[in-house]
Image (tube, rainbow, N blue to C red; front, side, top):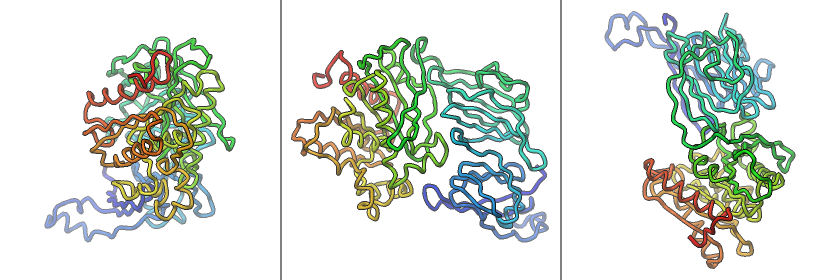
Length: 495
């Protein structure tokens, strides 16, 4: 308030790149044409394209630009690491990137990345994740430099988000948090209290910055005997891959526990700990184990974790998922006969690859709203916009895409586990043709000897369901198929 006014324009060039243009205008330029005060402000200046990496994110806090780097950036002989958050005065950056005074607000390390940040009147709240555990850090700006004022004592297994109550006038903010066994809860908090001494449990009532517990969703399943553990599997190239294991306390390690492995591994989306109502009610309460794998392609360890599985390196995501499945079996929790996997969208591509390349590792597969034909994905609906993630179906087919197109890797000599494909007629993101064609080819090539189920909902878009009732039906359909197939209590082929 009372400062300069910056006007922004940006243009998205690809899924991960954009150009930003900005100009500083006077308050009078905000008035309607013909207003005398507007005329006194003079002509409007031209927009200036910011000289920053096209894959960087740009935001504003007071008179500072905040730059989120997705790749290393070298300027004035200094290299800033991918995943870093930089600040710089806008009046400097608008003249060019050279000669600016950059302040490193956050720099990642091998285990810690920046999941996001929020701004209040005087504070910048960093939401960091360390080995997929969340920790809030509170910074305050002084003389254009950010200084730490407080932080959670230690990273915690939970998800957290912050949003300001009124960033122009207050340091109060809304805090939403959940964990695998705790439903989402909303708190009112005050960043001004962040340095009063930090509790050990993260953003709970004993944390100093929490002022009021506003509301919480009710428990959706019995988590009283839930045991949550984080384990690490070793991928083919030696990379340590974390995963979370949820099951009842005292589960027997005899290889007979029905275990459901979920993964995504794409678009820099992090699978952070959050409440699992459906899995808790339909799987864990019945004695099963639920697993989330934090494989490469996601954002759990920052941009580098995502970029490690792009395009020709997509195999890294698949190898990580396999490593987690094998680790679960070696641990004694399950066996291939009692291990199932589930994934949707990009995760549908993931489990589609598990079906055709590692049928020996899984006893059942649920493949939802999937990409499966990587030769033609770019010609269907939004597929062309994913070239930065997968490559080009035309130019890169022979180079590497043919190696991870499940539709083209179906082999009549193999024996595939039972599988269910679910999709939506009205999916406007991933065309239902992917699932339809896959099912047809499995039926034709296998001659009916493979157990293949298919359900196409007529509504729902990419989520596969149009309302809660449909969502419950779709989840129950797939979960019962998986449970009956993997458990000793029934056989999916008889239902």
